[in-house]
Image (tube, rainbow, N blue to C red; front, side):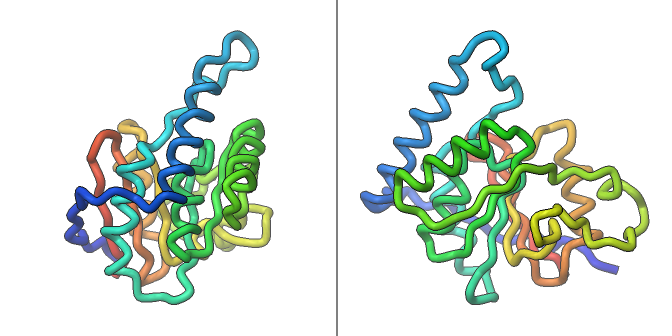
Amino acid sequence: MRRLEPLHIVLSENKPPQKHARLIQNATLTSDRIQSLKGSERIPSLVTSNGLIAWRFLQAVESHVRSKPTRFCEWGSGVGIVTSLAALQGWIGCGIEIEPKLVKEATKLARDNEVDVTFHQGSYKPDALFEQTRPDDDFDTGHGFGLFDFDVIYMYAWPAESATVTEAVGRFAHPGTIFMRYGGGVTCDAFRVV
């Protein structure tokens, strides 16, 4: 039976390098612009990770990563800030996002900041994820990978679904996978599937 082992994470007070800081600034401007949209252009479910905290969180988790090269996926990638920061850290970055407009924005942000990542339209929450038994498929996203085909998975966890998704990661992810769960502010938890 798999379980989640909490990792000891300490966020530093370090400042990111210039390229990372520029990416964080550009992502914040992009997010602010999108959140100010009105009417049918509005994307009500957009909540963006704090770029500086995300960078520090990625730095803190790096010492726990065993797989090289490191395959990283952000579930609900929004404007792509965390995926792009992971790629700047040298990881192979991928984001999955249900909102097509955000996939376009994330792709543009990465391109404008010369970051090599991919973003895909889709959901990280298929119904089977919440079932008690493992389905025959491996949560195929339709983009040539399954939800758990990664060494590190990051999620900005909505309070109402945090426990359920965390439990599903513990049940279905491969042993050794690290699950990074951001809860807003400086609330950062990380677990290894064992």
